[in-house]
Image (tube, rainbow, N blue to C red; front, side, top):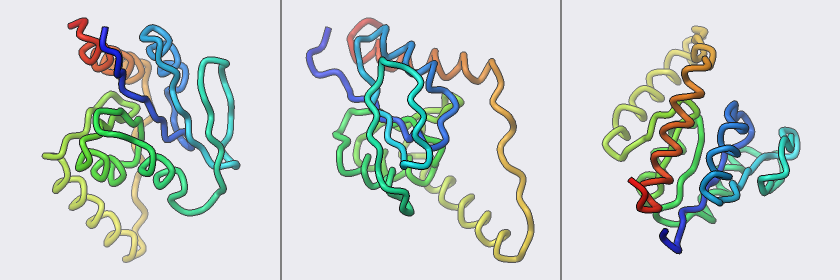
Length: 154
């Protein structure tokens, strides 16, 4: 087993897979670092470490950016934030189990630009589809596989 396990940070303000994170991290003896603003604090288990910060714009993102190291993993739904992380050698995983890579950056930023243009015109955009049980299982498997690979198990 490697001595330098990756830290697992969670953008917890809107994370729907906290239970899955706790389970996988527990299996790998890693304590996940949940970061949330005071308005979104919701401790759900004893097997986690919560960092509660002021409710200001991008506070969670900045808190995590100032602490992650190359090789760590961050779980977030914010794809623009994920792009910043990948450029630093940090792994970014969505709650649906998609590992964001640097090669995804151009497409992600283009889609964000198009969404913002659409919103400025006053059009309403649909949100993401509901998170399904299959999405949870996919997320759990991807996170477990990632941590196993870093421990040299796979």
